[in-house]
Amino acid sequence: MPRVPANPAKPTSAQPVYRQMVLPTREGLLWIALGAVLLVQGYLRGVNLVALLACLLLALWVVNILWTTLQFRLRNLRMARRIEGPVFAGEPFQVELSISNPLRRNQPGLRLIDRGSHHWHEWFVAMLRSGAQLRSRYEATLPRRGRYYWPELVLRTGYPFGLIQRTLRVDLDESTVVLPRLGRLHRTRLQRLLLERPEASQSPRRPVRRHAAAQTEFYGLREFRTGDSPRWIHWRTTARIGELMVREFVEPPLDNITVVLEPWLPEPFEDLLKRSRVRHYGQADAKASQAAKHLDLLERAISLAAAILWEWSALPGARLGLGIADRRSSVHVAESTLRRALPMLETLALVEGTARPRPAELLGLLQQEVLPPGPVVLVTTHAPSLEATLSTGLRRPVVVLNVAEPLVESFFEYDAARSPRAKARQGA
Image (cartoon, rainbow, N blue to C red; front, side, top):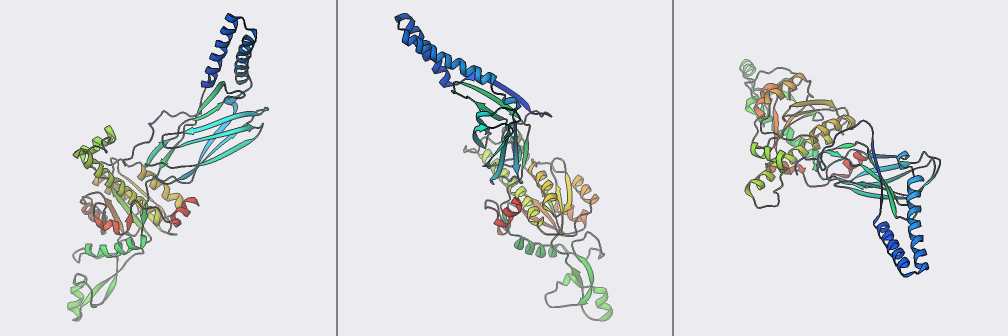
């Protein structure tokens, strides 16, 4: 699914916004209608008992109004919402609601409602005593990545008879960045692929010199062995000593990694995403089906990039790099800890996709940073257009992972649930 907010954006404010009202309930309207009918019937027919009963019903309605208006101070109650842990698209997470009473009198019969486009929780508090604070937890799941704006909290009470209802709406101005779906990444298989792929990019014509950010470092010369590539032969030394000598390279550890995302979308579908958010998924329309396919590839590419960063963030002492060729290119470099990897995942969550990436701008930002001395992985949705630019500008091989190719499915499962180990890290 495309990254669109589940509820529309709203203006922000520094302080919570309170709105309260007092309205009769449906039962209260029926109650007063019944009282009015009985009063009219008792008066017209001269039945005093019926008229007395009608007056009693109306008196209870008035008592409920006075009690609800004078006894309750809902505006003085304090409500809060707390989100536990990072929030990933399609995965449940915990939400904690709290309400406290700083007043000197108890507040009975309260109902706190937290209802949004993709979550709904009602919490009934029979008695909130003076100075007390109560908490309630529930589980929610948000289906799409992006920024999710939390709705206002609704506090209601109809005590004591439920004929009149007082409602307080509190807008806490809260939003959460829903991180991309991680799926399941087999890190060992991907590391094996990273060790195999760069060999095809090495060239004997390229100057051999030591570079701090190179993918492989020149270590020395040794005798030719069976299985060595003829491209590694050092012909000058071979001619001098009369024996085949090859260059020996040292592969850096795969604990460090740099991920470059190319969120490419065809230009017509880029406009379709902004205008209609792809409303024609269910129709047998060729353009809509094609748009859905490209948007699905975009989501898979973003999820793959996020899964790689999430898995590598568990390796102690490693360094991570992220480059995004979106409408505005961005580069992030950090140590591989959960706290420092989360801002990278939040940046991925807000990617919109573009038909016009800026390779020169991205390359300039990458060259300004000290990238980790590890493999460079280009995650893309189509035939790579940035591979040559990155390989030449960074002077290191680039491993291309095209989510449209079946190769990616050998180490990445988009629709699968994450492993228990990854979920345990989220809870920690």
